Length: 480
Image (cartoon, rainbow, N blue to C red; front, top):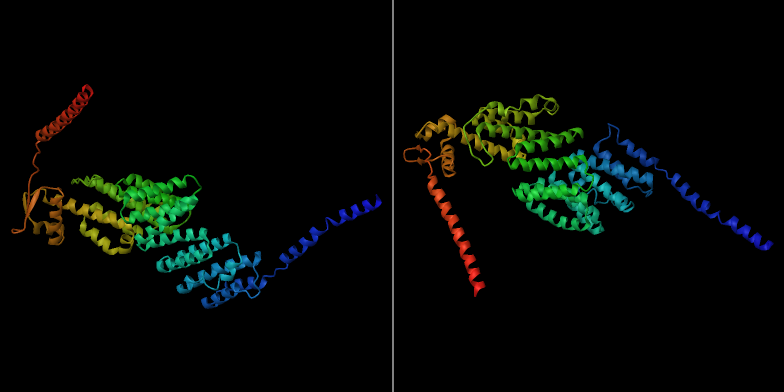
C-alpha cells in the first residue's frame, strides 16, 4: 500500500508541472519581441525636413523587415507603415506606384503572415484612403480595384473580392461607364443574395439605384433603392451610409417633381453629414435643397404643373432663397457653390434668360458637373423660355418672329425652333409663316362637348349589348 501511495504522490506531484514549463517560454518570447528599430524608423518620417522620396524608402524598409518579425507589435507597426506609404505615394503624385502597392512585392510578405480578416481590413482602409486623397484620379482607382480583384481571385478570398467589386462599380459609375458598372453589379448581386450579406446588399443596391438613375431608368432605380432600404431595415446602418440612402430618395422624388418631399430627404441627409463634419458631401445636399426651393417656387410662380402645363402668373417672392443662404448653414458652407445657386435663384426670380445664361457661363463647374443639377437646370431653362415666349406673343394674333427674338434677346433660329416645338406640343395654337417671317396665333377653339359625350354613350351601349349577347348565348347552351 505504501508503494502505491508513494506512486500516487509522485503522479500527483508531476502532473501540474508541465503547464508552467510550456507557458513560460511563450510569454518570454512575446515580451522579448523587440520592435524598437521599426518604431524608430516609422517615427522618423514625421520630421518636416524628410523628403517624400526618403519617407517612401524608409516605409518600404519597414515593410521588408529582414528579421521577418510578424508578432502583434510588429504587425501593428507594419500596418501603420502600409497606410503611411499609400499616403506618401499620393502626396508625391506617384500614382503608378499606388496601383501596384497592395498587390506588389512591398506588402506581399506582410499580407502572407497576417489573418485574412486583418488583410481585408488593411486593403479596404488603404483603398478608401487613396480614393479620399486622389478623388479625381478615377482611372487609378479603377486600376487598383482591378488589381486587388485579380489578387483575391488568385488567393480565393471571396469576402474581400466582393467588397472591392462593389467599390469598383461605384468608381465606374463616377466615370459614366454605366453599362460596365451595371454588368458588374448584376453579377455581384447574384452572389450576395445567396450569402444574404445584408450590409453589402445595402451598398450594392444603392450603387445600382445610382446607375439606373444615370441611365434615366427611374422605375428600376426606384426598385433598387427600395431593395436597399428593405435590407437596411434589418441591420444597423452607419450615418454616412444612411445619408446616402436619404440623398438618393430625394433625388428620385426631385425627378418626379415632388420638390417638397425631395427637400425633406435632402435635409435629413444634410443634417447627418453636417454632424459628421463631411463638407465634401454636405455641400451637394445643400445645393439640392436650394434647387428644390428654386424649382418649387418657380413652378408656383409660372403656374407650371407636374405634367408641364404652363401659365403666365408670377410671384417673385416664391423663388427667394435668401433665408437659406444667409442662415447658419449658408455661412458655414459659403463658397462658389452657394454663390452659383443664389445667382440661379435671382435669374429665375427675374425670369431673365440672359442673366440665366450668364450665370451658367460664370459657374460651369459648380452647375454642370452634377448630374441632377445639370438635368434640372436644363429643364428650368426650357420652362423660362416657354413662359417668356407665351408672355410676349399673348397680345398678338400675328407678330413677326424677328420682333419676338429682339424682345427676348435671343438668336432668331433658336426662337423659331422653339416656337415650332411649342406649336407641335400644343402649348398654343398657331402656325409659322416662314415666307413672311411671321407667327400667326389662333384663339383656342371651344371643343364640342356633345360629340365627346355622344361617343362615350355609344361606347357604353356597345359594352351593354356585348354583355347581353354573351349571356343569351350561355342560356341557349344550357337549354339545349
